[in-house]
Length: 284
Image: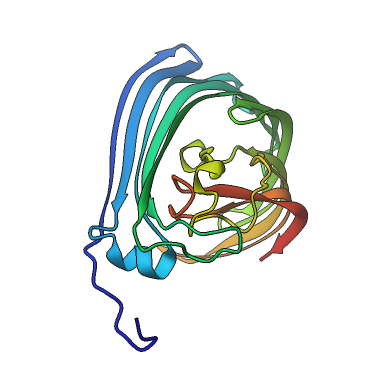
């Protein structure tokens, strides 16, 4: 084929769908409000190149991939107004996910030097499934120290067991000062722990692509980890006129294992999510 020849046309087929259901119960008993909810969510992704000729000639891999994710769990929240100046809150979250994937790839064989040996494609099939769990519990406290100053402080515990198992206890504190009815200042610190998106991770069998045009240049990878971050925030709001409010907010974030999501399905049997191993600082 000439380098100036137009790329063969192919009809790509792709689709996503999501279905979710929630059933919740709310109740107030004296100074206590609580809610408990069960939820279920299904999402799917499908991709096909249509005619595989174009992708096979230009990419060395024409892949049809599908991915599903079933998630279900329960969440509960409660608040107790112990006094006009003091409100105690608490809650939990439990989720189970199952994420199967499958992929069929048309590839071309190559020799040990990477030279194509035939123009007849071969087909490879890969599939797998993984179950993951997430557990969370939080306990914040809202306390109005004086009429113009409110302090929110507490902690959140998160644990997940997916491709790796990790946990973290995250303290948080926030102070709001309202010197007048039209002016508000705030400053806060939070520690966050974010698991990598389970539905975007897969464990494909790289060995299936050995000695083919789809063989990756790098065959080693590290398992995605949860992102851990420190978040500092300061801001202010001002009511200029009735119905007109202006505000300014700035934050500084320090993160390790920063989550970076990729949406390519080629050679990975599903979208992948990776984490950066260095420390990152973000300011705004």
